[in-house]
Image (tube, rainbow, N blue to C red; front, side):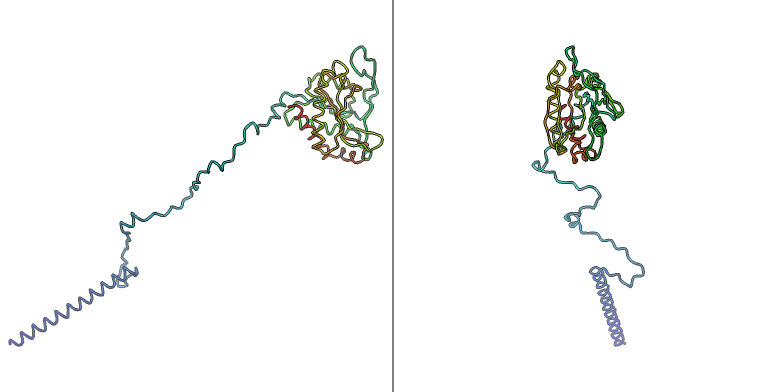
Length: 313
């Protein structure tokens, strides 16, 4: 009986030991699975429901880690430009357009020469009781040696182009006529400028001479021979010189002379500054073709505009 008790105790102890070993092995296996999950983030296949995993970084990492710059649509803040790289501002006085301001109260009278018919009626060459010389009103203009374009047509086309440009620049423009069939005397033309109290009268013509070799533009101004022309001589010559220089330079034509004339009715009766520009020679084959072309007429009008602006500063 005592032996059986001892045997039973031995068996029980053995079973307890065996059970303990099995539990230890299971615990070890569970520990290994947990460690494996921590290292490889593997999900144990023995779980029937997936466990929610929350990864919280250590506090020390949250504090010390430099956050990434957020990606936004806000514009990048540029570094201020160093003072020595900033371009100096343009002074207002250098960019303020002066032409329109100066032209606001300026009156320009444009007198396109000749008409489609001559006017052989005579009129006094100059005012005053001592003037007995008479001169025809309009003996007719020249004609292109090649194109056969009449001078009055060239004169009117340039005059109308110039009118448009002057008005766009702020000048007040008065035309002595806009109809080529209207044949005016030179006293009548001069009085249109006088009545307008013009700052300048510009008479537009084209030249001609027998040889056909002469070329270039010239300027005619009044000679100081009577009370009218003595008062306007200096200003007329000053304006005429500036305009001729500008015209020939911009268009690229030959510059001829600024000539004083006492034999022109339109000058002698004028009480305001007056000039007469000869745009070129219709008697020259090359200049005839140029003067008859629209492009060249535009260039002439531009050159006259810039000359007038320069003269009327």
